[in-house]
Image 1: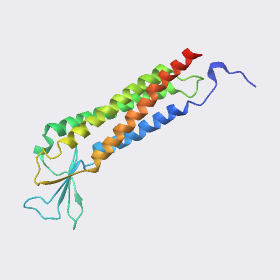
Image 2: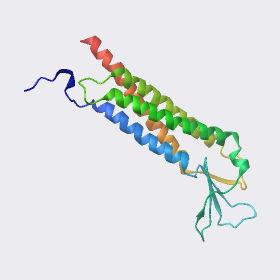
Image 3: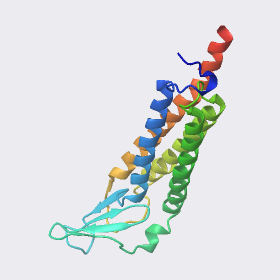
Image 4: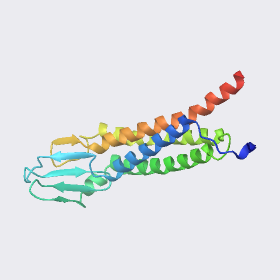
Length: 194
C-alpha cells in the first residue's frame, strides 16, 4: 500500500457537501424568484376586461387574458419607480453575487483532493453565504409586507409565487451557510477535547 501523506484524495465530510448543495439549490430558487414576473398578481382591473390578470415582478410585468397568451414587457413607470421595487432589485442581485462568492470560497476550502479541508475557507464561505441568504430574505419580506401599499390599478392584489421562492431560497442559503460555518467551530472544539 502506498503512503501518500498530504496528497491522498479523501471524501469531504458529508455535512460540508450537504451545505454546498443546499446553498446551490437556494441560489437557484433566489435566481428564479428575482427574474420571474410574479411577485404579485392583480385581478379585476378597473376599466379592463375582467379576465385580465397582471403579473408584476422585479424586472418585468406581464399581462394574461384567459382567451390569449401572456404578453410581457408591459410599461408601468410608477410601479418600477417605487422604492421597494428598486431596493429589492439591488438587494436580490447583491445576494446572488454574494452567494456565488461564498460558494467559491467554501468550495476551495472543502477541497476533496487533500486530507483535511481548509477550515478557515469553509468557515468564511459559510459566513458569506449566511449573510447572502439574509440579504435575499429582507427584500422578499419587505415587499410582502408592503404588497398592498404599492400603487395598483385594482384592489384585488394577491401574493405571487416568487415571494415563496425567495423565502425558501433565502432560508436554504442561511441553513447551508450555517452548516458550513458551524462545522469549523465543532471541529476546533473536538481538537481541544483530544
